[in-house]
Amino acid sequence: MGTPLGDFVRAKRDSIQPESFGLSDRGRRRSPGLRRSDLATRAGISVEYLTRIEQGRDRNPSPAVLNALADALSLDAGERHHLRYLAKITGGTCAGRRRPAPPDREVRPTVRETLRLLEPGAAYVTNRLGDVLAYTDGFELVMGEIGLLGTGTPNLTRYVFTDPRARTVFPDWDQVADEQVFDLWLGPSAETAEWFRADLAPVAGQEFTRRLHHHLPPPPVPLRLAHPAGHELRWHREKLELRSTDAQQLVVLLPADEATAAAVERLRRRSRGLLRSVS
Image (cartoon, rainbow, N blue to C red; front, side, top):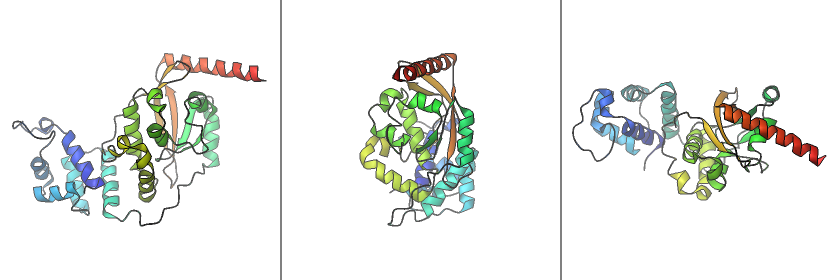
C-alpha cells in the first residue's frame, strides 16, 4: 500500500521528461517520465531504497534523503515544503481512533474588517478543507445563485464533488476538483484532513478518491464560472495566508477581463433592481 510521500515522489518522477535533465531517450518504456534508476542515481541512493519509499515500505527517510530527492527532482520551494509535510504525516500516526476536534471556524475581527474594506469586491475566507467561513456581499452576489452558500456551513470541496450543479457552474471542473483535493494535504492538520477525506470519500465517489494520490500542485489558472444569469465570469485569485493555526486564507477574486467586470456590474444593477421591487 502506498503512502502520501511515496505517491508524490512517484507522481513527480513520472511527470519529468528525461530530456529535461539531459538524459537520452533509451527506447520505449512501460510508464512515462524519469526512470527509477535515473532518479536514484541523481539522488545518490539505491534503486531498492527508492522503490521502498515509492511503494510505502519505508516511511521514515532521513532529512538528508528528503533533501537529496528534492534536489534530484528539481523541486521548487512550494514542492519542497509539500515534500516535508508529506514525510511528516507519512512517518507519524495520523488519526488514532477518535475523531479530532474540528478546525476553528472563528474568523478574527480584524479579518472581518478587511473583508468589509474589500466591498464591493468578491472575497472570502476559507481553510484548506474548503469551508467558506466569511465572505463579502460581492462574493454572495457572484456565488449566491449557484447553490454553494445554501447551507449553514458551506464547503467548496463538498459542493464540487457532491452537488450536480458544480459541473455546469465550473466549466473547468477537473481543474477545480484537482485544486480542492490538493489543498486537503495542506491542513488545517493531518488528523483533521484525514477525517475529512474519510468522511467525504463515500459520498464523493471515484472522482474524489482517484485524486487523493495526485500530489502535484495543479497549475495556477483563472477560475471560470458559468453564472446562472447567463454570464461567463473569469477570475484571477489572490490567496493570502492568514496568521492562524487553522490554515485559513483570504481569497480575493479579481476580474480577469473586461467582460467579467462588465458582467459583474450588470449583476449588481439587477440585484439593486430586485431589492427595490421587493420593498
